[in-house]
Image (cartoon, rainbow, N blue to C red; front, side):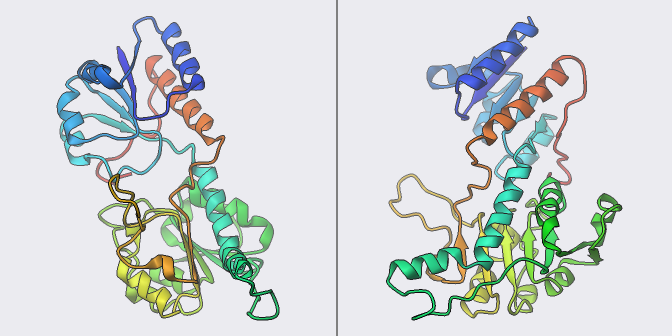
Length: 323
């Protein structure tokens, strides 16, 4: 069986773990796909890659299992993978790190950390030329929309701060033994009844633009943190809600436009979000914690060990649910 690795930084730890696999399973061959070696994609049965296109699919004649080193699948040719009965596997090894980042963004937003830093760099001293008041997260009503591993970890981060957790009724089965949680019927109700909302949903046909002006324009004085996907929130409506100061503030790690190779300047939206003082911008880096790659590699290798020893694969994506 041929295992291919591509478009993911190959370091000594990767090589060590893959060599251990190859030594353990005699019929397993490891192929590093780069340069002229890319032609060997046609021989690969299991592929680990951070990018995969329709063109790749045409060339990957023997592919049975596609493994991606992250969670989101919306950039992949899902329908075509489904038609060819290729198993898609992701990893949730980043979840605790992403939830830590979401929590950090929330604290930074409420504390106006970046805003006040920028003001002081311009010579506007705290307590003299500006309002320097900030808000503690303690005791706030914290809405969480998306109760996968990120949402569950986020509850743990919030636990010392005496917060009321507001979330959706459909997550009740995951949180049966939890106290201080209020369950509501829909996202609109969660947003309306929370002081700060953490968004960590996957992007699917059902969640695309699930938060629009109908919800945003009722969120007067509230805060929003998004570590799910940009398109969960309607782009123009979010911009207007912030520009008109309906939303008190937002912190975003996920966006609507991503860097283009031939452009010198790459803003994250067609709207000038970067000009808004009540917005904290983060360049989709929640999973980029220095040591988290080791957790991802370990998770993928553990999963491969299961498969190669005849056990079930973990984290198989449900194509119909899109996660």
